[in-house]
Length: 116
Length: 112
Image (tube, rainbow over all chains, first blue to last red; front, side):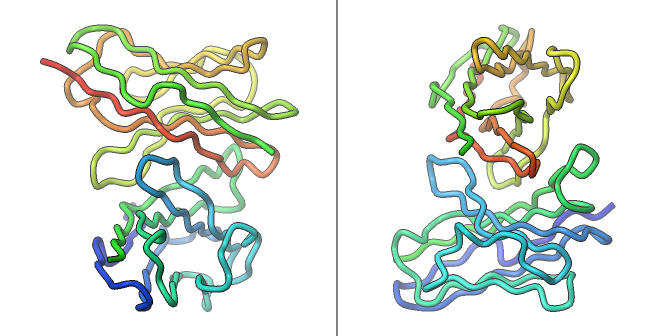
């Protein structure tokens, strides 16, 4: 079973530029999550999709962050414009259905963003 | 709201020694608890989870954890550490949504 794929692995941009991250979940997984992991902290949930609908985006800074999952498979997370404090690893995860006892989260390797 | 405290930022052990990583949680009802491991440049891998039942949970790679409701703790243990166990370890708590809220992590350093 192929895991959660993310690209790019690394990205360096200047502040005020825009950037996009891509995630391809495990085949057949209906639920997709984006987490932000700042250095020295645990991952923090940004947004959760169920198929192509948003379940929870309460922690997403909507003035600069956006995410979509148009066909219920791949997802893109965008930051525009980026700030220095957005430097972090962005992790994508997927689960077979809504997270539950029999539907654990599977994580990708993440995209490390550095904003200079 | 749920939260997790991992009081130790770094833990150093010698290879072959025993290990205990501490985790305290805050949640108003019965929590669901997890331990994840993250090697450099990798994503998070689930080591073990507690939902209900036996409070001593066995996981992968020889790890175990014990849920103690009276102490709001879910400490991770391993009887003999291998050099390959060096990584970042995250404790997480979830409520009814089963979506984990993570602690800040503990970095495990293993000396030969």
